[in-house]
Amino acid sequence: MQAGNFSTADTYLSSSLRADGTTSQSLVQSMTFVGLTVDNVSITGNSATVQAELTIGFVPGDSSTNYTMTCSVAMVMEGGGWKIDAFNFNSPV
Image (spheres, rainbow, N blue to C red):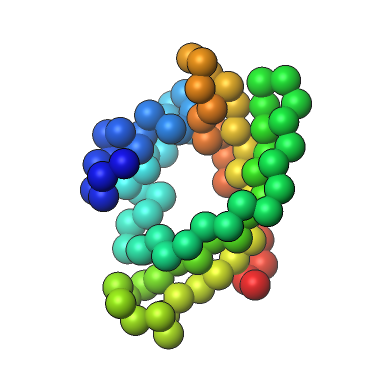
């Protein structure tokens, strides 16, 4: 996906998140995604939970502003593909 292509990124959000007014642009606002490490994936039927470590930066190119946290992402199968349904950001690493 091309940087700044929020309309494409929005297609990865579940219908319930979009109905709440959530957009991909509102999720990233002033952050730069630096890295993502997937630790565990659990799939049950049409739902899944992904445990991951997410690193974000607040000043592009300045790694001293990076922040790493664990997160849990709930996903649902919609229209033949996995969609993000909820985020739960946990403690910093």
